[in-house]
Length: 458
Image (cartoon, rainbow, N blue to C red; front, side, top):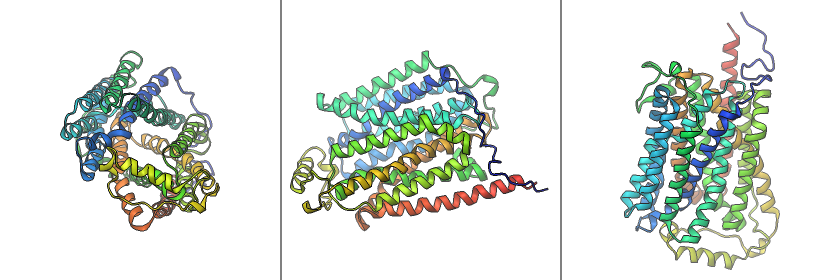
């Protein structure tokens, strides 16, 4: 029998949301924020760290890729273990491993030890996905997207303040090792937060048994084989590889199109962070309750597509204070420093002096609004929908698989985007990203429509 479809007949579109238990949510928010501070302290300087030991550009690429590639194997397994033994013990093990990896990085006297430190953290450092699983334990489908948005906000705040602390620490001490040890201190603080503030969210009676909690590197294929969950995981990977390609190339794009260097790019990324955190703390819960996760996902993809297409059409116009000769001098000074192994002989075209104006900057500022909104919505909405289609005893491993696919996308996106940027020009990766994201809108909308029709035709 076929039931009539209603505009908001989806189970995930409810207005009567359950209030979040902030007493239990805040420790998760704090430990994610502090963990991200530690991680983002080393990320902006990791390539320089490797360069000081004579690493070639290829070896630097290996250093940067080892962490996400190790996560592809380790995070789902750690998630499955948290389903079996509880969130708190696995969080503590994960955070201890992360802390030790930062200490090893600070003590590293060779490129091999740097790589080892990143592999160690990647295999066992499942802090974020385990925290997301803990939050899923204490929420239901009416408020889970809002809860995951709060962890996303902690993630975003870490990315805002972590690099700033790293740069200040490096400027004051002129020591990359001290930056690594500072990251270890933040990681140790997160251990204390978990030990003394975090209450176990997965009681023993709800922990997975042999059939639900599978500890194997092949867990990822188990979830990809499920129609809806597999589609959501593929969507997570696809949108992340497009978005992270945008994110990793944005600084180079603003240099070649607008003549912006460090301070200008810092302002742009700060603005992106502010919008993203605002969306995840103030709006995602309301929008999820009103429209449901499926519509939220479609809306986020539309915002990302619009933002990328607008970015790709940004006019090549230098900012009003741009002087080509000064920018060229700054780049030459950087290439003569310890970052020479990173920059090498790569040539970029800079705007001419006679193009100065506000048009390009204002256009880009408009473009980053929809892309920041979309970025703030997409991952919490997808992860929330994933948890609604797995059992409670699988939250850890399902979110671990999701997190590992994000890591895989982050490892490959800069390489793919860089090749396209260098071969076809500065605007091509962003225009192509917008077209591909539009394609995801069409495919995902069709899939969700098919799933809805099947569920209402019985």
